[in-house]
Length: 135
Image (cartoon, rainbow, N blue to C red; front, top):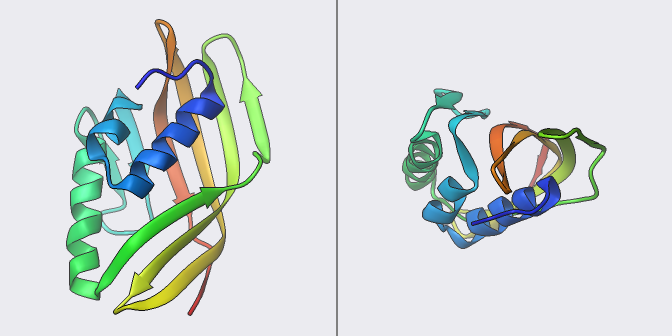
C-alpha cells in the first residue's frame, strides 16, 4: 500500500482494519512502529506490532463475544505535516457487535504520527483513546 499523503495513509489503514486485512494494515505501518491501545498489554512495538495487536484483539474479542468492528474517523482535529513527519488527531467512532447486539463507542480519539519513507507515508505510531460505549 503506497500513500501519497498522511491522510491517505490513515484512511487506507482504517479501511484495511474494517476489512480485517491485516497484511494491508501492516503494509501501512512503519517497521519501527508502536501501537498504544486501551486493551492489555496496551503496547505493541516493532516490525510485527500490527499483527501482534490484531491477534490480541481477535483473541480478546472471541472471549468477550465481540465482532464486526468498524472504525470511522471524522475530519482531523490536528493535521500538522512537515517535510517528512506528520501528526494527526481524528475524532473516531467504533461500531461492533457484542454477543450479537450492536454496540457503539463514540467520542474516541485516534492519534497518529507518520513518517515519509521514500515516496510513501507510513504510520509510525497510533493511540486510541476510548470514548463512551453505547448499547
